[in-house]
Amino acid sequence: MYPEMYPSGWDSYSCFLGFVAVSVSVAFLLLLKGKDGANKKGKLPPGGTGWPIIGETITFYRDYNSPQPRRFSDDHERRYGPIFRCNLFGNAQTVLSIDPEFNKYVLQNEGRLFKSRYPYSTRNLIGKYGLLEVHGELQRKLHGMAANLMKYDTLTTDFQDDIEHVFLTGMKKWESQRDIPLQPSCHQVVLNLMGRKLLSLPPAEEMQEIYEAFNIYVKAILCLPLNIPGTAYAKGVKARKTIIKKVHQSIEERRQHPEVVYNDLLAKLLREGTYSEEIIADMILFLLFAGYETSSTIMSFAVKYITHNPRALEELRAEHDALLKAKGNEKLTMDDFKSMKFTHCVIKETLRLTNVASITFRETKQDIKVKDFVIPKGWTVVILLSGTHLDERHYPEPLKFDPWRWENEGYDLSKDSSFMPFGKGARLCPGYHLARFEIALFLHSFLTKFRWEPLEVGPDILFPLPHMAKGFPIRLSPR
Image 1 (tube, rainbow, N blue to C red):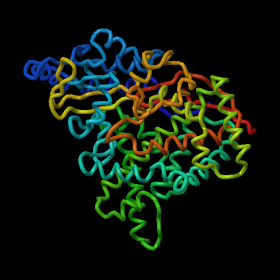
Image 2 (image 1 turned 30 degrees about the horizontal axis):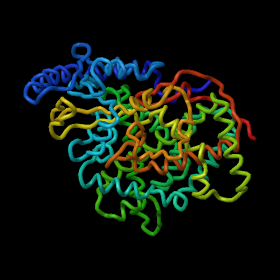
Image 3 (image 1 turned 120 degrees about the horizontal axis):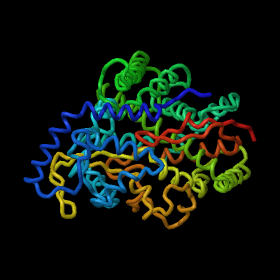
Image 4 (image 1 turned 45 degrees about the vertical axis):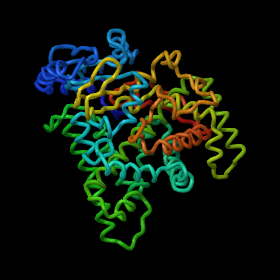
């Protein structure tokens, strides 16, 4: 009924097969080097390298997308403990951690003991000035500017009107269509919002071109870095060029018409006058990507989870119906946002289960002593956040959607090392306040406007990026 908006499980699996195959010689050399390094640096963390040469990437990918997504980490933890050596993504010099305290330590020591270092395909597609890869003073400045743009105090003044306008426009279109694939529909609505706030682009043909480019771009983020026509990576590189070109066109239009006043991130970056067009374009691209994936994915997965949990749906709908009855046509305030107690529980539980940013890559800047082991300088530390988010020691029945587990009034997210959906430290997601705000506003609008029923149910693919079978098609009915 609906076209696939994402790669199928087999397409994604093939992508990783290719990634591993092309990395064979590199992995072999790194494996030899790693064994040599173990003698000189000290005792390495326990672990293995999987199959000769090809490592454990295929097993990791298969297990993550199975009904037991922790199977890979569980099997390794039983043998080696929560911090172990493995061979992933063509790199035999890899240590994977599902230890929450060590994960927090790594993230909080960004720039001092560790630095962000993602696989080649990710680095190249994000760009050397994207917030994932930029380092030092430039990273602090760009991260600070992005965080300042989306800070908590600006949500109602700078974002709410645009969020509500974009959601209203999008939901009117959904109502007329009646049957929609929810996840790609949410992607498009959020991308329209980000295009409006970052580049002042109208949700018309220009954003449609960017949306189509993003559908291709995201499939290549962790794929075989082989730039041959027809490959996912080559298509991703081409899609990146399309998006970057749109940013450069916006810059040129503003130079041609300086009399037009803009109040978006691009205008702020241009007024700063210290950043090259390449830096600006990479940053805009990264923020578009982050908004496209994070908020919209959580919106659609939250709807899916409550669809299959009538008690949660009833309680959530009651909360928003009561708010609508009390407010009428008045604009929601920050106090209203804070009052959405059960909504925040649903958002946290969806973040925990979905794990949009499930894996984080760091490189050691010096030898790191952890417990009785040493991780040598230059090694990769992979933080598997889903490994703690889905750990039954922290969350009983971890694969169950249970928003009531978050009802503890004294809970402090900032102190919980077992739940870090937005990261930690210097690279804490700059838009995490905005993400929670727009997800809550989306749920308010969606629940008070519609009833719905799922049209097709299929397995979710959780890695490398979470997506639902056929985008979770639903049939809408106005309330």
